[in-house]
Image (tube, rainbow, N blue to C red; front, side):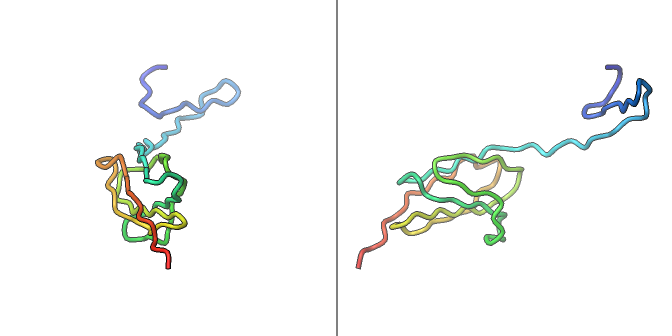
Length: 105
């Protein structure tokens, strides 16, 4: 298709070129795999430093696609103490925690 740059598209209306649309390069996404023992823990992911602003959530074991950056991951499961930690994407593609049972009183 000629000498078009990546992500460049020709705009055509009724067979006539109307100009070019320059699309910005999308940020690449990287997988973060979230695991826990036991499985089926709820997880939430937020930007590091903003734990209340959740950007993704799910149930272990699962993965989510995230842009490069630093994130805070929290795991919760009934009958277990919650656990959390920070990850740096793409350097840390896995987040794993072994959850501890809460003591029964």
